[in-house]
Image (cartoon, one colour):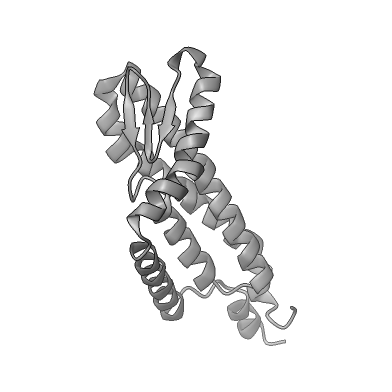
Length: 180
């Protein structure tokens, strides 16, 4: 085998095709998300998927809090949070999902990568909501910096590390595209 060909065929192809597919998938996911009615998000997705589990975790960690879940609001007698679009981890999921779908790998590997990405972001976002609740209650001065700057940056960093690890694992899909 020609050494130049072999070297090129095993390199990671990150070119215009990846960038265009990534951008198209990201925009499509964002547009689909934007047409979901707010009532569906507030009364179903946020309440059952984010607020209620966070309430359970908070009450388990600090039983005296007696946190409650009402629609998209996590409340106690001392503090409350409202979960709105963007507080659900969707931005990081869209970035990871678009990157995974744009990356040249087998469908099975992409699907497992997507499942792992969604699970990771969900767990991180739940931890974020609980941490913001306690920060807002006990360290209110930290709340804005944590909510706006620090934690979103950490979530994107975690997503980037996940994608780097996933692509490292998927590298043989590129090196041997003839194997399914």
